Length: 447
Image 1 (cartoon, rainbow, N blue to C red):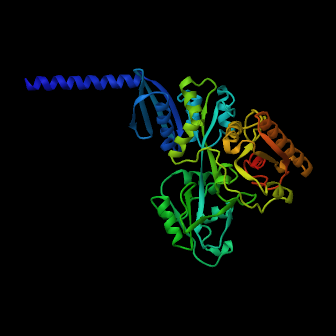
Image 2: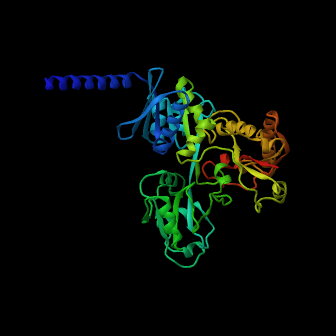
Image 3: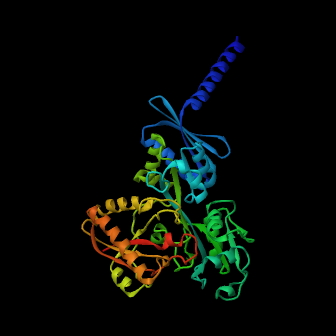
């Protein structure tokens, strides 16, 4: 009799398991594939927050296999599965093109070959299909009493490849360079490989389980230099270096990182096709909204939240520039543009890039907050040397500043002045990949 009862319960449990499995197979799916950097924490945090906010319950995480996370949920008795497949940016985009994913997670914009392969997806540079959801980056740290204040990308490559072994090469006192890294193929090494190493292998380094341990080790060693994620705490004993990529050296301050003027920062993207489904689009748009950006911050990444830094004295740039901004606070954004045809963005698109479109709306909402109502804005444009001459660059920078000023005034904002500064304060040298895109920008300052 006992055996019969046990067999009965086993049969019920098996039936329930099969039912759950069938439900999961039959459930509507939002398939999100691509970069491990996004798949590890950011996308699951966003997905769970989105599901909860649109009324789903019974939210649970399932790991059917390595590299695949499924988030199961129910609403009105109907199941939904958010499928998060971890690989890399190239695979995510390929899955989007092949119809195996509705959203691709990437740490970069698609290259020309990928755009050719995905021509049927539509305008991948438009704000309807390109969603810049967060930023990440690297801070290069040394002990607080280290004499070094800046490095260029070439020097950084020599250091972390182990080619440069003595601090004398960089104008400091003689001493053996001690490299400090975190283990594994995380976002720090991924970005270093993309922007700095360019095929060179990392040199021998002391490894640390996390940023806190690395910072403590660097603070205790005047010959040390290490890499930590942007946003990690420097502590009392270390400080970050300014980094140059052919242009001016930029320190990883809050404003310079969020404006993407700091060269070791990058965007984290979602991409969707022009016919992406309603749920997929709802998720991507949620990532842009305030609730989604709070989930981004909780995941450990930098949200696109418009919080101005502190006013500080500006020592670089033409005298006119320094006079204009002397009593102003820089807002943490640099408005950038797409280029028609086969330019560096690789696509024909609208004048503004997708982040700028959203930043213009974020700026309008920010200026409507009670403390900011009635305050005035300075709009300062910059051009790239590719304009052809200093006069042409000055005209282009003025045109860009005027264009943005008109957009802001159309949104009901007060613009005190719009000025171009030509090629002043270039962020990248001619010939550096993406130089035009980085240099041709518009800063916004608040009076």
